[in-house]
Amino acid sequence: MCRSPRPHLHYTPARIGVPDGSIPDPATGQPLALRLPVRFGTSQLCSFSREGESTNGSLVLTDGKNVRVISIVGDSALVRCSVGTGGGGL
Image 1 (cartoon, rainbow, N blue to C red):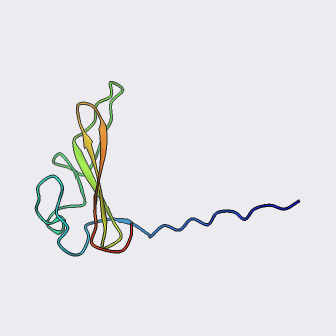
Image 2 (spheres, one colour; image 1 turned 90 degrees about the vertical axis):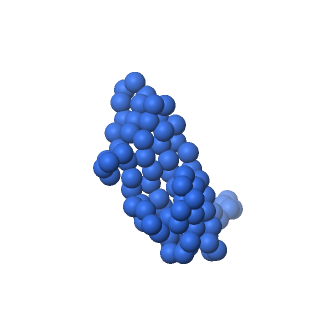
């Protein structure tokens, strides 16, 4: 019995944080380096209700060059992902 090899998946390590460089914040246009990586209202805590609502806010993931900004819209708990690139891969 011949089995095909398992696929090898490789992902660049990412962290919660802001990237080096001048990638603009999709919400404000200002450099992401000027903001906090976790921002939900006036705190760094996100909550969800049974009614489908959540805290407005965003979370920034980076590999140091590229960025993903995960944004949550409060009244609908809609999750959006914005992508910024500074070279390399995330």
